[in-house]
View 1: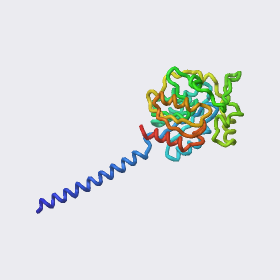
View 2: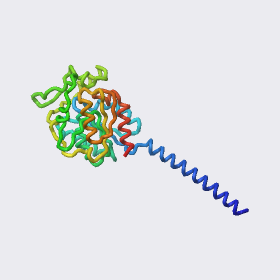
View 3: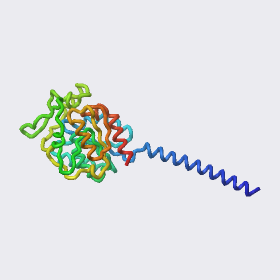
View 4: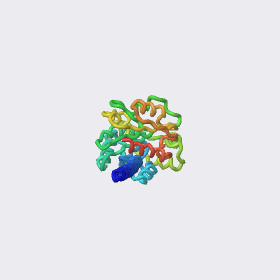
Length: 262
């Protein structure tokens, strides 16, 4: 009788223990799915823009607990842009998602070799390989009629045609927002477009790429070709070249996914 009682008590204990274990496992699993493994994000802007365009994306990510740093590229050369990006990466307290838009994609391809970079996110961005430069990719498809990239001036600086900026660069923003972007664009030195990559970080680190399907500055076909070549995880978002401004929630989802899948 006593033996039977002990067996029943042992059975009850084992059932209770199994229940507690399953609950603990489920809780840990949920936490693993909802808590980002990486909390640091560094955002790198492209040519004909500055860091202010990232305000909406910054607000979304910081509200979700991310530590976001926005790089202000001097746009004077690839080497200079990589240098200031590396300075921002040096300040991070751990693994970081490095994000680049447009020309910023070339910058993160080189700067992404920094030891704190865990993954790369390309937003309608260039993604050259070793020995390749930006201009050779830009020339692989005819420019859209709306494209307003001008020839370098007598100082070697490239600007975007004001008459085409809204339609060609920021077609899904209001004219007021597009006008502000035009007024705040940096002076981009053309030599950057011709500088080759020495070591493409996407060859060693996970990469995520956003194709802006309505892009008039970089043909979507170019974006797809670069991302496919590198086995980058591709997300297509309906938006202009500045899709990170017009569709910040959709862009944020890609960055968040990159922070959780490592």
